[in-house]
Amino acid sequence: MRILLASDHAGIELRQELVAALKERGVAYEDAGPQTRESVDYPDFASKVSRAVAAGEATLGVLVCGTGIGMSIVANKHRGVRAALCTTEFEARMARAHNDANVLCLGQRVVGAGVARGILEAFLSTAFEGGRHEKRVQKIREAESQG
Image (cartoon, rainbow, N blue to C red):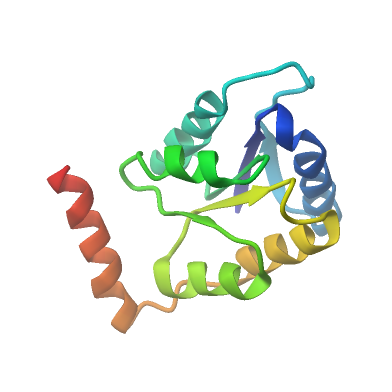
């Protein structure tokens, strides 16, 4: 498993907290920045992570901005990406189990570090259930091709 993380300037602290959590867990990751608090455009970072996930260069992606909303909107514009904005561990488990989500979006201004660590753990440790959910995920793929 290889995780690619990025944020904008409003999500740096939470992204760093999640990097620490991945280190502690021994999960391979790459931190795609930014490294300073200078204002950046979140679509640039969301697209970088989304392209890597869609191409199979990363197993899963994690995106953080102030609310997580902007990142999730941009990520879901990329074919093959199923980004989920999660504020609870339950949402993270369901996003993986039922929707085969491959990008987790979080808001630094919405969830604290402890909650975010729990959400990340739930996202990483939950597998897609397939079965009755597979046809629904297939319909998502079909919707992507219809524009």
